[in-house]
Amino acid sequence: MACQQEKELPAASDCALPLVSVNHASFLCSSVADTANFYQDVLGFALIKRPSFNFDGAWYILLALNLSKDVFS
Image (tube, rainbow, N blue to C red; front, side, top):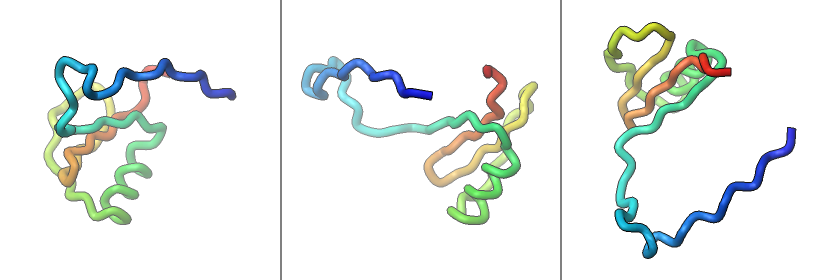
């Protein structure tokens, strides 16, 4: 599968609100258990309580990383 070329983003100085930090990140994955084990056991992230959603997921604290099962494909 070939990657589609992204449009070039404007320079930070051209943005009305420049990015200064990232509050959290969320990733879709095919196996929440395998991915969660990697973040917890290999990278040392701490598992935190997550609200009850209608899909599997795990929340970790370090960089406020959220993992969610890819239910959109």
